[in-house]
Image 1 (cartoon, rainbow, N blue to C red):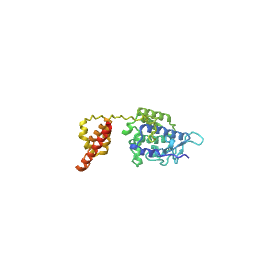
Image 2 (image 1 turned 60 degrees about the vertical axis):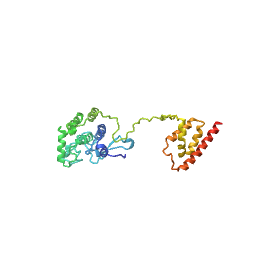
Image 3 (image 1 turned 90 degrees about the vertical axis):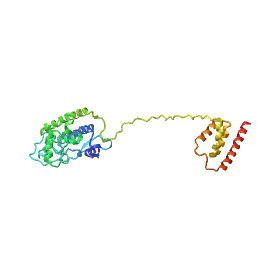
Image 4 (image 1 turned 45 degrees about the vertical axis):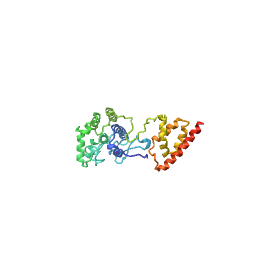
Length: 311
């Protein structure tokens, strides 16, 4: 026995707005009609077709839908033949009220047509949840009456808005007799045509599958940052004399270093001037006598450096 994942009912309820896209709905319809066709091919009818009895596979089989729960399935052919068994006069209600066929409501024998009728209710619900006007009703008579209206062409607005190919499927299912062999290919053709009208891509993944399409590659080129040239400050000589003492007050050691370099490079003077112009702390909280003493000391050091540089 193979393990499977969530049912279509659970998956749909977990979708945004609790609904599938048109493309996914049609793809689900195509796979589920194939599953029903395969069951009919071996001589059985399911009699309880509904979203809860279809589940998706696990992992790499998440795009495969499985038909489950054959607890009330019935063989409709005579043993060892393909001849259809004669219907019984009365039968008990078999199935789920929301998806049960009209014949099931009337306590009549079910056939392949009834599985397809339950299937179309399920499909309509996938296409638009508002299609099933009896969804919240538990009154079997009322539900059957609403289903009769649908097959009489009295469509609710949600169904009327669907492509005409869906209406053709409804009419076709209604035309089938007890022993009729359904044309499953016709149903699938109508589904595909309706998808084309809605521009639905049937090659895309189901809504519940993660999008693994390759994302655009990020550029591997190293980011280049623009180098901003430092602006050169033309410092008049007189400004140096006027401001050097103030600079010394807030950063004496740095001032000495730059002042010493100034004798050999004018770039140092620019740095010294920038250092002064960007400082917000020129007093350093020192008393005037302390500042005067430091200024004299620094001036002497600068003079000494200048004298040595000129030798």
